[in-house]
Image 1 (cartoon, rainbow, N blue to C red):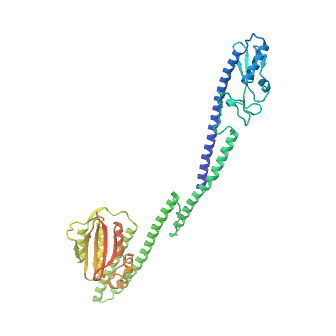
Image 2 (image 1 turned 60 degrees about the vertical axis):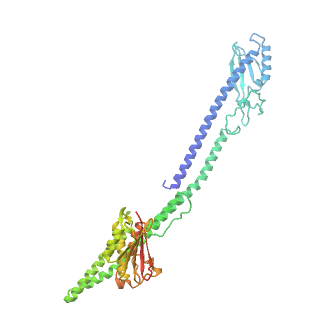
Image 3 (image 1 turned 90 degrees about the vertical axis):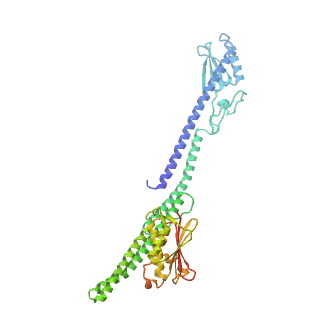
Length: 453
């Protein structure tokens, strides 16, 4: 059996059936035990009463008529069906109740031997269906309850009430079983139907429909599982789309330097010496561009894939900023009194992010590039400012997208459009952020914010 809902449903039904039958068996066992205790108590009471009657009767040597008359009198007083027999088992006398009931079906006789050789026979009360007698006994031949003495306590061995017998209890348990079984099926089926929907959603997503999502209505575990799947599916879709875009754009960017290389190699053999030297420099430039492109594509792919957390090492941003600013000829502006500026992360990646910002400012921002360092209570802020044409407000977010470049920039200064995208990924990897804003007096400022160690 492969259907999950059938296995769950049958498990519920079997557990319910075991509970019902176990309860019935325990109930029946309890009834029998109570009845046995009641019979034993009734027998003891009847034996004690028989001894009292024996003491009240005339002796065995008295005339049998006197013995019979006394027996009938005591039987009427005590409302008991009793009979007296001699040593040979011949009946001496019997009460009227005994004579009426000795031939009734189901009459239970209790024989008590007396000390003088005689014996008393008592017909014990029995319970016809639908009637209750005193002391747990019968109701009489007409189903009416006899008068109850003050010292008698009714015995009810059925905790479900006097009118619910074994058949009624069995019917009640069967109805309870059927009711719970019928009510459990739609609940179990609804649960497993949602699991089946989750399965179909996973299959559709696995077939390539990355935009497919699962209904996550509800507040139970299945809804939380669907919500987790949708969240993971969104992340996977974004990652796959990003990789597809990265691959497509990288393929497009590779065509230009490869085409220039192909042309240069085809012309270098027949070119004069002066032109041959220029072609060699062109080849070196294109190879460097290809190398930079491949390196940035690999780094972007590794960052987008989330290849583990960055190394949690303390990084001295002040020292890194001073080295990179000196290397690229940028001005360094540090707040007064700042002697230490440390963050936790991977120095190689942070150095790469800062270098990309400085190179981008030098390439597109004119001759003046300034690196400013600020420190707040919990954050370090690096501002790379230039005096270039600036970035239009509607493009200040898009410039951090892979391979996006402002119109005309590729023709003017080259580049592949991955530098700022890498800066954003590195900042996010270190729980930081980067944004672009305008600079007072013209130009742009790229602000990299990182949490302090």
